[in-house]
Image (cartoon, rainbow, N blue to C red):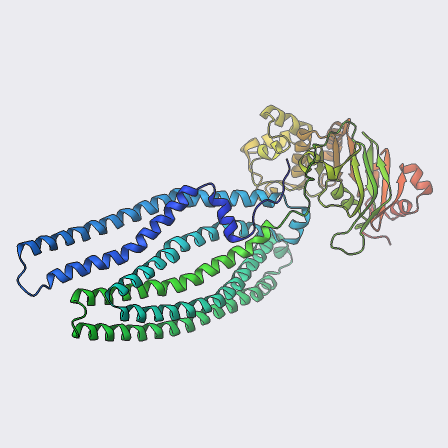
Length: 592
């Protein structure tokens, strides 16, 4: 499967992208908003008609009463129609928006999963999850503010201007001048409010990330009695939230006063014009009530609109904080990528160079070949390049120069999904999903049966422990597998690898977390697992790789020696140093 970065990363393009699934519902809501916006003016016009007929000088005749009854009935029907339209609007909304939000979360989550390893190294886990859900919420808010507030209230303002013009030009020009000035001031200030809102949102996301990080490391906090330190550490970031929110609210306070002053001046002008025209018999009492009522209603709506524009900009700011999720993939499949076909499992690194952040090359390899079905040990001091070697083989990063081949197929020219389906990694630090043990083991092969899961668990020497638990295979592992011991988690990961049964196996000293009795049993399982496979073992204890077909020695990002244990002890300088520097059988982080 070719996972390319095809999602747009701007707000309105994303709206269009997601709304293409629900075009009819989206347009229905927009049209209903226009109708409901224009209904305010219609409501005031009907009130004017009723007032004019009520205020006829002479005693009302039967025909006048009939006309009055007609307008009253029409007014009631109009009110009921608007009530019905609101219900229809909300019904469509509830059928549309929750599904839209689910689609947004699903597609963003899917997009994020296919980012390169570097993306997850550079972004805090808590922030990624926060931004996915925040993007869905922001898209909903932007659409809701646009349809229910901006669009609807713009229609109210346009309708009001049209009616005021039809009554008298003085009403129109007075209200138009105020409206232009009011909106200009509001929009000008709203841009600054949105900047403060963006800063505020960024500060909130940072605090969430810091809290998640602290909770993840709560054991260390308790062991080192660092509660006060962590609280003080978090306070500096909380201070940023407080300052950014105060700045935003202070600006809104100033905006409130300026806009309120302009409204007072406009009301004074409208009332003066209304009194003048009524004295001169240029308007009726119905016109007088219509103008005053319509302007007050419109002012309230436009006032709300200005501050809703601030909310709109804030939500745009919230969303823009989430666009980091939608950046192009750093590692992408080639346009004509084919599936990897592994027949023998031969691995070749040809003149490979790589660096993480455009610094000096941290991995430099001349040609090295691992024959198919070989068992190969990878050794070296900490930071020597062993893990980088494995990461490059999995194509978690793209190399700068050279080629990495599997059975003469360049891994850059095959799909990432087919590459990783042929490689199984058993890490030193086993992490599990907060799901059942059965679900965690099934991760190796989603099509396996329960019987195959039990078989894999038995081969990994974990079956007896699982069935001794109250809920057996349906027991939950807890967050990161915390309900199980490290050794139990390790064996579940091994059971998962047995189910996957890929032709290339990478072990990061997979038995290092086990006690000596269990380790002996697990080695039997690993011997079964490694049968007829190309195996790479990152060794922390040289005793585990003495019988390897080949040992590759790393030093300062380079492959410096290759050979068997006996050969390297005789001719290898770095390997001999590793052997001699072992502390209780374990390679130290650095040479003495």
